[in-house]
Each structure stands twice: as structure tokens, then as C-alpha cells.
Image 1 (cartoon, rainbow, N blue to C red):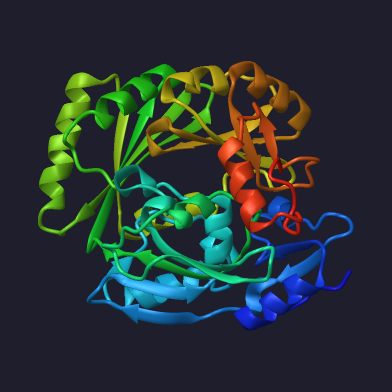
Image 2: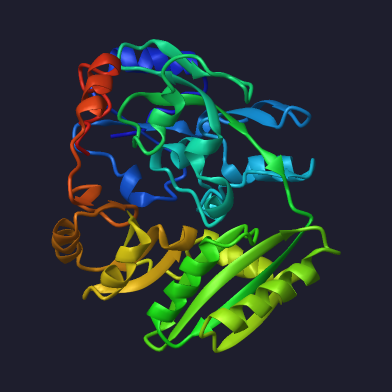
Length: 366
């Protein structure tokens, strides 16, 4: 079935009124989420693109849902600002709407929070064809039900996002990354736990298994160029005194930027396997890491989010059920997007019934 390509919110309203089942998609940077179910009309959102309003003095911007993340990032950079939640797949063309729908925050969420902490306003078309606004366009806006946050990670099941308003932060002028090498995952994890409970200001804290005998902890520091050397030395001293670190590398400038760009693009993942995002308590990470069938791994936000690749979704699904964990499949052609434990969704079902009673945007169970 050929895709519809609306260019205005009003066109989307009319499309919703005229069709029984719709599936919006953007750049297909997360292919599993862009796959269109049988009997469903594809809705290409890339025509609804562009920054609507941006006031650097207010640290907020509003843009259409089909706007590429990279386009927004480039505009913000000209004013020394950025999106601290580090939206993933920017180089692959990820859009703002897809980032919100899939809740794909990157390594930067460790310090400042994820998508839901920066999304302050939305406009969307519901299943009745109504154009609805939630939240506002200013940071200090508190009125009623926080609808914008409810759309984060919703996979488009409540309505078709048309506009999004985010708050932004001043971008650090300089970055340095410490790459710590450990002989075991447990040693790397213990370091991560210790660091997460210290006053050190870290922009990112990731774990990167390199081999079965080499595990890296990545610490990103951002700030003024004159202040960073002292911060690095204090951190290095702490690590050498309190952890079993084998090697400390300090990455700067191009090498540092390349490392995090590759992580943002998930270049470590095998493109022929399924990429799965698994939120979990860090204490469960060792058990997850030991599961058979997982080929690639990267852990963000001090071990609170696991990104894994596998060719065996059935096996991973069974393991996650036994561990009471859930995962979101982002690549490949899975039979279901959510695998593992299925949480109860009483509130979600009530919101779905209010916004999309006819189920035009797919079932809430995914």
C-alpha cells in the first residue's frame, strides 16, 4: 500500500477521519517500529518538518514531528545549546516524533534525564480527528494531566504527533572522556556503582564490553576547557585508589567526539540481528550479560539501560520473562515489538479508550 504524505496537521486530521487504521513513520532509523502492519495505511511524516519557533533566550524550541533530530541539533549548536538527553540515531535521520514515540534517549540521559524530562509540550491528532494540545511552550507550565510525558515511549498508539516543544540547555564548551579498562564485568560494574554515588559531575557513564576479558567503563566530562584537567586528575586519583582499574585512557577532541558519535549511531550492533532496548535495575545487569544468545552489548545510564543484539528473539523473550524484564525491539521484523514480561496497563487502556476508541493507531498491547 502506498504511503500518504501529509504536510500539515490539518491534512492529518482529514486522513484520520477517512481511514480505519494508520501507521505513522519517519526516517525508518528504527526499522522494527516503522514496519506497517497488514491492512494498515502507512503515513509518512517526513513532509511535516521544520522548526516552528525557537527562542534561545527562553531555552525552548517547537518543531514539527517529522523534523530530523540532526537539523534541530545543528540549529541549537549555532546558539551554544543542545538536547542533553542525546537522542539516538541522529546520523540515520531520526525524527523528533520517532524519538519521543520510541523513547530513545542516549548516553547523555545519565546526568540530566531522558526524553520525558525535556519534552514540555505536544500537539497531536487523536482517533477522532481532533487536533489536541498537551503541555505548553514554556518551562514553568503546570496544568492538569501531564499528557506530553504519557506520549514518551507510546509507539504512536494514542495519536499522531504533529508538534513537539522541548526545553534545552547550554552546551558544554569542551569534553573529555576517560576510558577505563577492567578484567571482569563485575569490576567494571562496581566502579560504575561507586561513581554513580559520588559528587563527580559526569555527563555520561556507560559500560562497553569489549571481549570476555576486557570491559570498558566510559566517563564523559563536559565543561570549561581550563577546568577539565583538574577534574580529570581528581577522578583518575579516585579510580586508582578505589577501583581495580587496569588502564585509564584520556580521550580528547576528535577521538572523543568520534567515540560518542559511534555510540549514538549504535555502530557496535550487528545490523543483521535484532537490536533490543532493556531497562533494568543495574544489579540485574550481570545476569542479563550472562544470557546465551546475546551477541552484542552496550549499557548506558550507569547500567540502567541495556542495549543488546541477538538473532534469537524467542530465546531472549523467554529469558526476559523469567527475569521479569521487558524489552523493546528496534530493528528486524519481529512478531511483536515488546518482548519479555508484559506489565499491566490499566491507565494506558483508559487513555487509549478516550483518545482512540476505534483503535485506528493499533492496539495498546503492541
